[in-house]
Image (cartoon, rainbow, N blue to C red; front, side, top):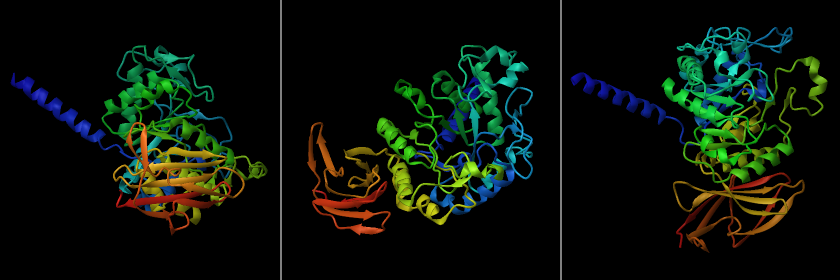
Length: 464
């Protein structure tokens, strides 16, 4: 009897400690840096460490804490001379159980020393992962750790990634399938991983559940990010919410068309955020992008192709629109550009305290006005009634002057389901990007630059 009591007490302690650990996951949209926009699949340990140092020094104080290495950390390549660019097709590094290993080409010391370094700097460390099981593991029929099953027993060779040939899916109805994912995250936990971005996930709810279980089984809290985006099936929303964030667009780059794309998906997903879960509008392509393109590809880089080395091609007004939309949408903020060479203007936008406060408010803005390419998005402060943020966007290519009432800007109070009245009180409004107080009148006339935004932070005192 005493043994049973001791066992139950120990089990309760372990479960309670585990729950406390998982309570440490962010309650506001995660923030950090992801290597893909600037290094593609060719980041190496030297550049990773250098960016990590800059992140800790210049961005951590603003809340950017997750340092995430995207795809390619497991690729074995021969390199073009003087570059990190591959001259041959990649081979995937695997251990004896078919689980990914660090590339000896790019990360010869492995991932744990990088994670340890990040933790010493006060950062958290993350990795990209493809859904499923590596095809090489299936071809070799490697054993699944801790079981009598093998890779071929669980491989789903039908439901595969349509844009990448590295993995097969996992048939979660087969014995050994959950143990496969458990073995992956057991290794990640041993390395000290705090964040995992899993690609090709959104159409496959069974594997979303499997990864959620594997993270809990490994005992180490990890932010769980679902990718890629362009989510089409809203019936899967309950499964997406098992993760902490879900990409709702396909890849976003430094193009006007991508700004428009983000607004489209923001409208579709407004109101779907919950505490601990946020729709993700993808990375922030500010600064220098695709650094690892060899000089031999320079002509292609000048043709407007985002796949080759270049600086962010958005205008300053478009950049303000980009970051303001991410703030008002409560989208996770992950910088994509190279931190070592980041320009001052980009840095000033990324670290603006008012923008960060709006984003970390954690409430996805709602569209309260939409007419002739002018949109108004409003976010209320989650902690204090009478405070909030407003974005007045000019989506056209011409400067616009437009009048707005307080109601059109979302400044009204709802008392009953179908009854609303305008708020009366002392309005204090601050224009964030122009750094000035705004004289509030019953009708406001705002001059909005082409492709630009007026970003307002307000407080209403003595509300009647």
